[in-house]
Length: 617
Image (cartoon, rainbow, N blue to C red):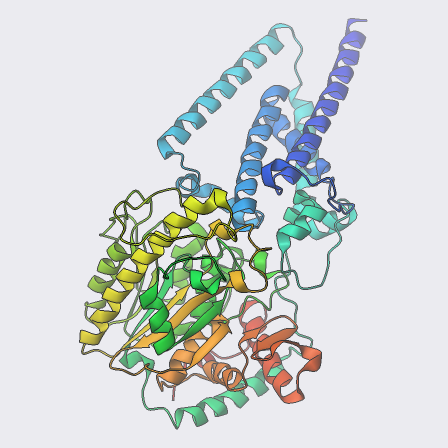
């Protein structure tokens, strides 16, 4: 009789346990969805797809898996809740700062807690203390419950836990081996094949977990219908011949110069936004350099993020816009480390190539990527960066300090290419610069009053960037070297998030860029607006009269035909966006050649020979 009672108690226990885990999993899904909305508040008029509230089965299975290991329901549920609370909080931050959600590959940033904490103004020491205390408390509860369970002779046997472990693990393995099948058939996620320019808006309809699962094994780029080895052979021959013809009119190799690729973090031109400023521009030198040299505006898909993507496009000349969902793809983190093809502008140099970034090296796989593409040195905080002075109470290394490190590298013997990523104007913007000689007058009729102070601090910061840039360019005029200086802002700062209705169209997606060539070589140069960063290197090669590779011969051909941006099924030229169906047969062939080359290099068979990207004759 006692065994029957005990058996009934166990049955009741498991029914209650499963019921509690089910409720807990439902609440987790609810908060994951809320994390994509301002203030965790879902708009009552929000349109939901069938998948929006789904995903409980996955959270449930993960909880059972943890329970099978620990054998304690309370600790297992609390552990899952803490982990999910962290994800909810981080996803809310990213959604509000960048209008993006956390993808599966980005979950790996948990390996860089110090860098993550820097975005939330929490010291690593305090976070470590909280983590240790939490672990100790959970461990104490675990020990106490185990002791009490044994004392009253009511605990889950090892045999039952093994069964739960095997079943839950098998389910999880099946889910993550076939995530798209699980997503479609269980979570009812409906994949759309149209070009997605606003992934967060779509995620708010589909639900966070189904959207996250869609990033586990994504198809980053559709295979071109005419991708074949024969077509690749034709492309190789075609552009090898074109590059030879181009090089007949060129007179030197890029390797004979010293080239700087300078990404200015979150730099924009406030005068591009109608009526935003009531007084003079904070970046007079940069604006005049753009106007009087080779320059214009660069198209950036992002606001407050996407730095690694823009630098990837500059280095590779590969377009992000050809991807299925460009705003949720980060090549460095998602696939580029494992790609067979790592040919970049670095291949044009047999001198030393150096990268500088006054921040961590752990985010976005930069150390791995930079090694793969051929950088000889990578200087970052605590490793090569010597000057770490900051502006006022700002938290990031100033551009002036970074330029000191850059000049030290530039003055070394046999340094050909220097790739610079600044950090000064990265968020947050709640820190001030006392005694700044420039005070912007912001028109709060067109910009939110509640963000005025942040914008004020930001604009003073880019004024300091302008001064630092002026001093830097003045140095090039004194140099006997042939110097090429490519400068560009990667995206608008996050303080402009939420102002899309005020500044419509591409106003929040065009940042300044210029190429300055010393000794007067860039004066009165070509002006190109709404230009994709993939064309920076082609413009540099063309305007500097440098030899091209076969691949850059393809890029030069696109430039010659007026192409400024290339998307999945469209291009952008001076005439605006033109879809493939409206292109001439000749132009469509060249655009298709480009897409095929990019697919072959990143996701295909890498059939094109290495000298297609590197050989210069």
